[in-house]
Length: 290
Image (cartoon, rainbow, N blue to C red; front, top):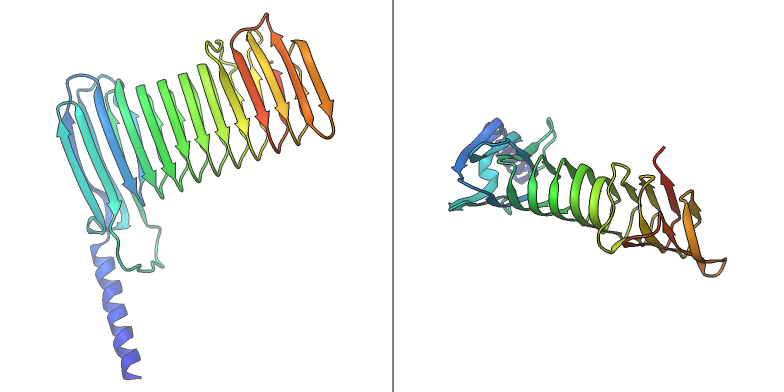
């Protein structure tokens, strides 16, 4: 009984200590002056990350926002070399302390000039990026991606979470291993792959693919909406799922057998870059914008 009392007392002291150290609001912030296109490398663990444009500003501003968390729970590393800014914010390995009070939250918020090279990675936290132009390599593990108004060479990867991108353009490569992909915009090339989740692609904002592209889902359907003047060559295949299309295709090859799924090859508006669409376990729906 005495040992139990000691353990209870220590637990109570620990709970009071954690509550006393918990912080709300901006716990840390810093600005980094840049003179041209910034090169940003950001990594977070057990924390969300938001990167957004501040237009024609001449500095990268970073702040850490906490709710019922303590800055001492995290390892923060940062530095600058010329126009390159490196920042890492990860939870320290420690004995887990259960929290039964209000919501606990940590987030890194970055405001940067719109012309940027961005390499961002989160582990156990979501990623939000908006209003940027340049080369972007974005990765999340156990967290989704919410992206909008991006232009440039976009490379996205999520291992446990959805990828959602809106009003963007350029070249797009997106891979999700446990979550769907939902895109809308105008792209010159797309490479989309989902191993466990459906793919939705709305390309009705206009434009044609200029290079060979591919949309592939291993366990989920594919739905695409295209502009009426979209010109491309199509190679569509489903192994275990239906095929529904209202596209004005000039078909030069068609196969529909119960044992082998559906396969169709054809051209729309005279043809163009090859667009391959493939599903292993899911249907394909194709239509033009109304």
